[in-house]
Length: 328
Image (cartoon, rainbow, N blue to C red; front, side, top):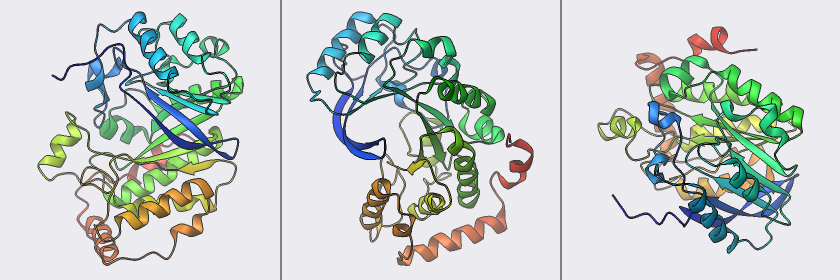
């Protein structure tokens, strides 16, 4: 096991995001904590973030990590603070430390944190500063996929309750959706994510479509290593993001991890970089037309895969579940 400095965050970096429709500089930090409570009871099929966690981390270490993060803060209008679990879990981030962290970034218009829905309650939200925003990892609006493919440990109704509580408090919701969890065909993954975007959009300020990337020490990595799983194609991601042309009032974007590599969303070496540049343009301009009329020899391979999988029907067919399982 590699050595961990408990007084330093996992990592800190700068990027750009959108606040109130404007492109802004953002500071991003990942705090090292005791980790996600759900991961200790089985965990999600695709998540390997808990490898950066350690049971003995307490308030003193997290406070020291905050000091290291503040050394990098230069008045960015957006701050994104992540852990390997839930920022609102009091066993992961003690309440007094949470308050100190969220009130430490003078000048920030938006401080984004992540949480599982069980920790998002009206009482908790009362204590959050008005500049807070919360990201919820719904992953899919289909309970069968959520249970069997993602193993998320909650149901869609739990997301709805948390999102509604945030909306009632006036805090922005960012919803994470997962493109192509295991045991799904490429087309089923596309259709499931499109349905999920439509479901999450009315409750969200932004919807982040996250193509699955193969993380270490996960169930998905085992499937991938033996050839039973391939991350989604960029072509598939584009098909989902084209929904932007029919959905207004919410930002739909994707900032995939591991993109252009075998472990992340990819097509082929001939078009990966070009199409990922198109994705970056779409993320900030929100013009779905930039996703159209791109081609590569691998697009025929992708289209052939869709037809072949439809014919073989060897994986979970999400279409069978959408009408029965999707909460309306």
